[in-house]
Amino acid sequence: MLSNEAIAAIRKDYTLKEFDDSNILANPMDQFKIWFKEAIDAAVNEPNAMSLATIKQDGTPSSRIVLLKGIQDNGFVFYTNYNSHKGKQLAGNKHAALLFFWPELQRQVRIEGTVSKIAESESDAYFASRPIESQIGAHASPQSEVIPGRHVLEENYEKFRLLFDRTPLIRPSHWGGFMVEPKSIEFWQGRASRLHDRFLYTKTQVLQWTHTRLAP
Image 1 (cartoon, rainbow, N blue to C red):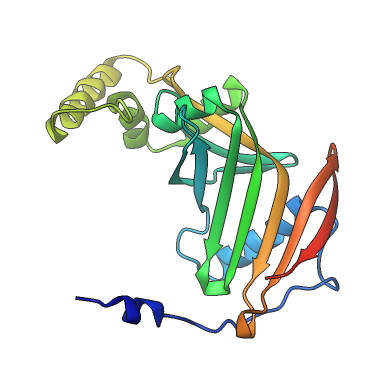
Image 2 (tube, rainbow, N blue to C red; image 1 turned 120 degrees about the vertical axis):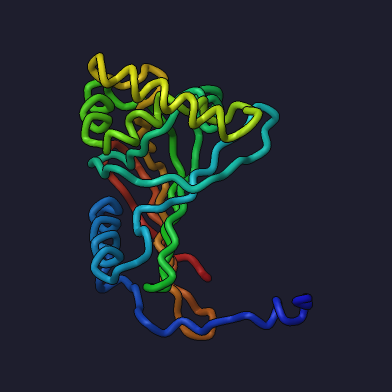
């Protein structure tokens, strides 16, 4: 049994990089693109994996990992089942938070903002680009619903596979993209002695930002 003392003793000093006023960009979306490319170049495991936090109807938080599938000038795009727990929570409360953690670079990025559905044409285009198995899976899975067993998914998948052998496969209306439009973005770079570099960008108006350094 792992003791609490052993857990508390797990620590790592961060010495890989630094992040200061001499290399910070004025627009956080541009800064994010640089860090994101560096994560890809560093072969970070699933660099587009991000924690999405939403608010349930009772006001308590809920989070899960989703995949970033697009970066626009004014936001971050991911796709999901609109009838899933997260889809329903976002329909009831547009506020959300994202978190990227790239341990190989000792970095994280925190994003808070509001969410809206993207254009149906964009969802159609992305859906069509997915592997056929993933397209069928979007039809087959009643995401977040209680099911009696895995056989339900497998039977649904086979039913839709046979159906789409005969008819064109289209995007289900309950599946599509969301864009998180950030109101604030924080970049965190691990540093030695826990004296980390933290810069918080806050939106002042459309595509206009200001940034400040935060104590770690």
